[in-house]
Image (cartoon, rainbow, N blue to C red):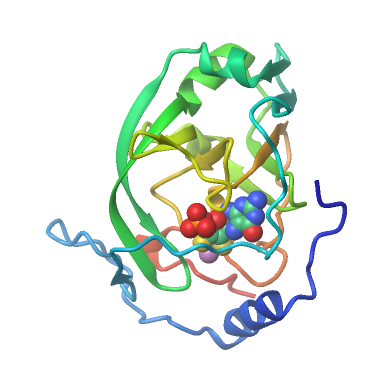
Length: 219
Ligand SMILES: Nc1nc2c(c(=O)[nH]1)N[C@H]1C(S)=C(S)[C@@H](COP(=O)(O)O)O[C@H]1N2
Ligand SMILES: [Mo]
């Protein structure tokens, strides 16, 4: 487990610079019915690895899911308990803010809607923050977290998620840029007020809708 987030790495500084300059923005904001590739994106067949450069060693044996905050029923599951929940299989596209997109990713895991049914967010819960083992965080509005194709994924293409892609378990929220899909998921915090995460405080958009090209924060 990394106890320091490499927030001053070369990659982090480069991506902060892109946010300041508005790099990759095309100005297009509509989503034509027949368009699968969001504006400013290009298609890739391989699957790039993007993170802060630290791969935290977390085995399935040691992994726990800790769900806490503005909820009625706190959840603390081992991997076996997590895997014993109702399983979902979703196929979705990846859109990374650095402009690559990858179609037809086959994910398996726990639909976020099933998690919500288990932990029962309180009436006043409106946001979630994901905390990861590399010190990364990212925030989502509850509606975005609850999207019908969002899941906590443990497998990709029928195989356990590899270490480099965020295994044992990562979030997948297909309708937003991929930085919202936290790898090496450690805990999920439900909040009444929004708490911007690692990239959101470094010039990236708070929501990150690829179809509206919400790459960077407006101010
Ligand atoms: N824990 C953690 N999750 C993370 C990141 C990270 O640095 N740490 N990077 C995000 C970014 S910017 C992207 S594009 C995707 C990349 O996922 P991949 O390496 O599986 O392609 O993970 C996201 N989730
Ligand atoms: Mo990214």
